[in-house]
Length: 128
Image (cartoon, rainbow, N blue to C red; front, side, top):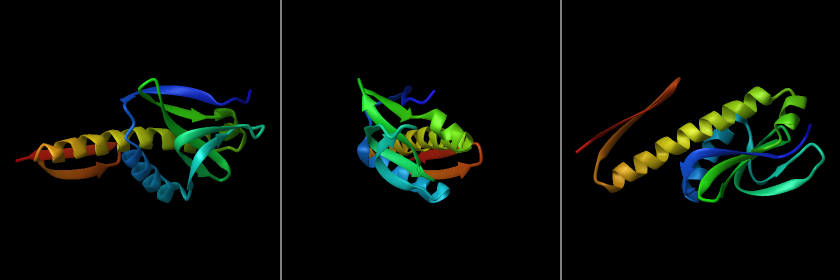
């Protein structure tokens, strides 16, 4: 059944600049575009802090009650045959957002960073 579901992540206090930077990178990978709305199968919309639209379907990210939440209509993604893309976008967003937030925090503390993106994760080497 079609509806916009909200999935809470463990990420606290969304940084809009990091979220937009990560979403832009993901858009390049999936040939998507940035959006500020998520639509369900029936065209109902919900505003989000940042969203990614691929082939007419979208997934969004917004802060609610201090936590980063994922908003999307998984049914619509499934009907379009793109549920695997939805899940990959969510995984990539959480992974890249977390890595970018950690890297920025370490850099503010004066660490020099070497960042490597691997197939299954991101490695951050921090040293002074």
